[in-house]
Image 1 (spheres, rainbow over the protein chains, first blue to last red):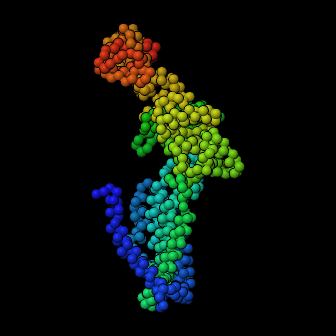
Image 2: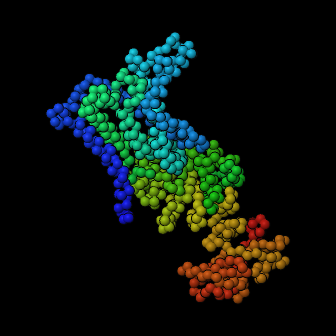
Image 3: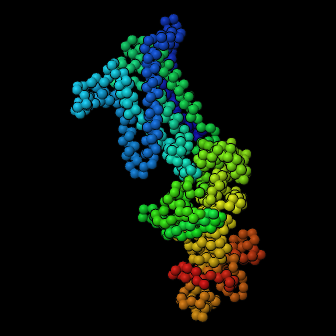
Length: 281
Length: 347
């Protein structure tokens, strides 16, 4: 086999697979989105955007991402720093912390539903401790704050570990000598974190944030389990267009809007955390 | 004044004793080199002085102040690391100014001091660059400049030249010596390279298995090794050794020849001589030549004296070939004697 050709031959199956099962359906979806009652138009987009639930679901999705992602980032950084300092039991702790990653998002939603629902753990506990007289319906339309909090908690619990594993790997790549140099030249632990860890972690932060932000825009099952229709989000609306309203074209248009939002945020993150030329480890 | 006193410092890593009871005083503005093979404890000792490692027992004093309980930044030290540790995400300017920024010095003062040390190290044209755009030698200069900018009492260097290629190493060595001589700082320099140690040091501490076996001037360490280990470690090639038997009245039998030596009651000593302190003469040690390596000005002749390997450095004019028999006379005042039991030097 020609050594120059070999790499291309080796990536051919994956490329074909992705082309057939991702690129092709994507083109189909894009086509659907732009086909209206009178041929090609932006009609679907206009319909989707002018629907009364669009601003609410967009706001909810953004708000959830804005609350969940920073908390997850801070937690993941804290956890990664702690794990990195451990000498013994490091792997065990990492395994335990990443257990939620092995659970599907719907299952995660149901676990938290079991905590918050009317006959759930939280109510039983509060009644048992004498903190409340009877079961409270936390996840009702009367408590939008609690619904939001439950969803945010479930999301944080479920998906912090994905950032954690990326950041743990990234921190492990920073040579110890930089920390020693910073210490000798007078940097406190907090300054070492801010002036050495964070800037040298930029490539990992990029990956972790892009992954997490894009996934946050796609939040669906956890919301469906905990909030139902009380807390509309973009993905839920796509589902509703496709299966409740049987409007495939509108569903495709909304999907493309979510894609556009994801692309914009990815570009913002890439730009904000870029590493100047020559400044890599 | 920054005299450094190391008092009874020992270090254990688990069951491994890295340092045994180190006692060493380094004078103000002295250039002290810690020399030894890898694993001898020299870097551990440096890191204890820096505060990056904590001694198991003992004390470290700098300038009359006990500092071993203080964090590195409060010890009045700066350090140059083996892999430079020039921060890749900061420009050369910010690297040199890193310590000054941590001290929260005003901007104009930082700029002035960075500018001055950069000029001193001839890197003022690189201040805007990142370390990824620098060569190894330039990074080394940044690392030294960063340490000098702190105007420390003591500058610690951990094999700072070992990652440079041979020619650059030679150049940086001379430059480092000049810059440090002018900076009035006390310097501790760790290396495994004896040529580097010889050329830089006011005093060399030769370390072996977690102990300092000799701390003396380079010439003293070379001429009068305190222990057989030093004699066999310093010099390239190192000293030759032959067993000597006491024949009474200060006479010793070495390879069948009688040589005057110490007045000692011991039955056996080790005779030692440097390869360059041998001459071809009519009387002396009989040697059979195994290998001749021309070194330009000299010939390095590897011989066999009564089954023991023996090296001589001779003038390159001589026509010597493998298989020849030579009579090598040691220069009497350069002969050294070691006790085979204690391995200490015997006068």
